[in-house]
Amino acid sequence: WEKAWQLLHVMMLSKLELATTSFNAAISACEKGGQWQKACHLFQAMVQGSLEFDTITCNAMVSACSKDSKWETALKALTVMVQTGKELDTISFSAAMSACGNGGEWEQALNLFGCMANHTAECNVIALNTVIDACEDAGEWEKALQLFSLTTGSNLEVDVITFCALTVACDKGGEWQKALRLLTLMAQRQMEPHRVNFNSAITACERHGLWEQSLRLLAVMAQKVLELDVSTFNTAISSFGKGSEWEKALQLFSVTLLNKVESS
Image 1 (spheres, rainbow, N blue to C red):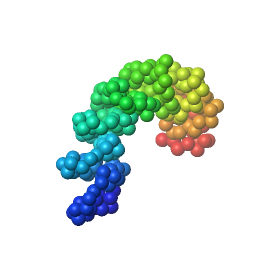
Image 2: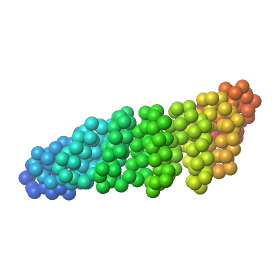
Image 3: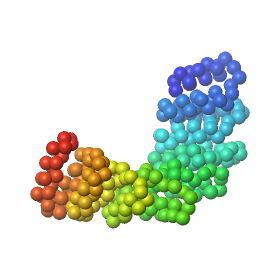
């Protein structure tokens, strides 16, 4: 991004005619380099210089803001897009929702998700996962599940990432039954679960001392040849301890040593 910034700066000082594509490339470079302030500076230069900007310009700037949780700046960029008649697409909304989620503004992310229907932006799995992540980060597991329920009877597809975010949300809320239900739904849909799905479900069970459920989940993971990491074992061992099953806790600890899993 530094070379792109320097090159564009030289072009501006040399009073060379600058095109939208030049600014787009520089803003995208700043976005990838995590330089949201410089991306905003370039965008402001375009506006002040009456240089035409497009959806690609704004999306790059909003994406730069999302990586640094600058949700207010991201929303201002969307406002500028609307005021200037620019088309808001799925990337525009997803990047802004990500900025809101990273900034702890899950309600703003929900509002943006609802606004997608008023634009030509396609409400796809990326947008859905982004808003569910925002709810999950804020501990709003009920909202996350409500969003998931909207997919029932619709053309909106979900993927493993969707279920990962949902099981993590249920884990944070101590909703072990709902976490297990999500695993069942994945099986019904013939979707292969990720280790994150199981780890979250095991953690939810551990909070309630449900060692038998934890043991069953470990067995399923073994059957599916999923890699068990130190987090998986630690949580399961903890659930055995809460259930006063110290012998099983020791047995499982021995398994971690045999499998050369780094213990802690």
